[in-house]
Image (cartoon, rainbow, N blue to C red; front, top):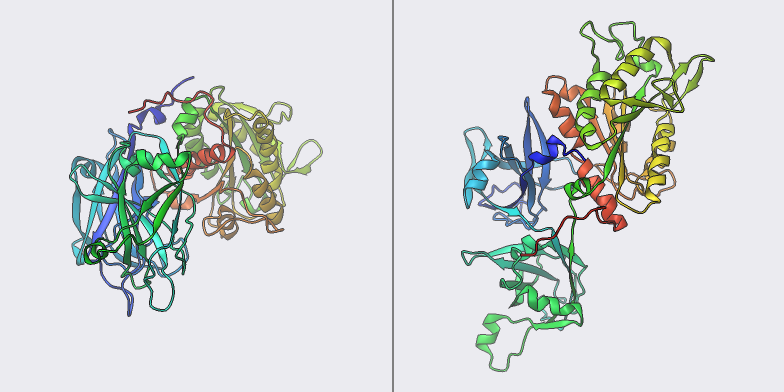
Length: 539
């Protein structure tokens, strides 16, 4: 199998730990609730979000627990932007949140400094008070993950009116002897015998892959104003925790001050490791290099709302230099995806037009007019078929997405029956955004979310794309009309107009950014390893 150029370039993954000091206070009567978002420069003034941390309530000096993961390319200048926001609502969108400051730098700068601290700026040259951000980088070399289930018994009561509200924090010891936060559990309200949710932490994050590295576990009582009270603490190692794999291991939770003051002090409760398992997490590259084929299908919107192709104001009008937005979208997305498909044969369909010879409206006709063999040779083959068919059909309607989604889903379902990570399907729909069968499309997407497939929608023209954004599901899980939620998020919508003046690779990078996560999430959900798993090098 040919190694795609794009894949081979990614040297490794880097994990960034972020903390801030002296953040601005934006909340009346309480401290800010910060979150840090990481963006990467796509060129042409466009930034794409790569990752974001959790939000920490009432905290001016946050140490974020969630690590930001970046693909590190040695040969690219990867411009990054870290933005810190005060989050006061549930929406994913950060435009309605207060900006507490940010910095721009390159990944190279962060990687080459052991600890990278910079003053936060509200805009170029305008400092955000005394706020600073500190970032440290670590290469992720280990794909193993620690899964832990933990409960506690007889914890000390810390609240005057009720029981404690306990949560756990795990710290690893850095080489310099500092304690670094690696996991913070959820808070369990009013309970001295809590049982926390099962959780997982990458082995590299948890202990740097060293089973004997000291781990400090802290149990504290959560207070909404951010002044959490320590219940107790203990030190251990992953080797000791692992004994919980066969039978539960117990640790005494000790409050150092209480222990000093009272001779009769025993402990402040017992922390019990119910189970500790180590499993391998596979990456997108593990699956692709392990033999997973990515099958690419294109669906083109030929409905009347696009305008008559002979008229220069039509979205299907081919300019004198031979292009339009439909063709640019096919080229830019297809040129990346084709590297992952060995046979380079791509089925391509149109929908919403009247098709010869009987001029019936069709919602899934082959662009090459060959229904028994709708495959085009390479991306150029799709482009040629599109140019050839355009004068031969009549743009019509309605705009139905569900037939073409269900068409690809049938292939994906057939492939999934093999029970191996051998085929994944990407459907690219290019549309002017009007949609007639929204309810059927919702159902088709919910059904497809249980299959090895992703859907990319590129919106061309100036229309209102609210329906497309709704299908994308970034602001909450997409549900079918009957209320059934999608098993995973498989739709990525991008409006072409945002990329009109950007370099060609900006569109494909944004459109395809979600696909690796979607592919991995499907196979993880199924519990399927790569066809040829990577050789594990145990350190």
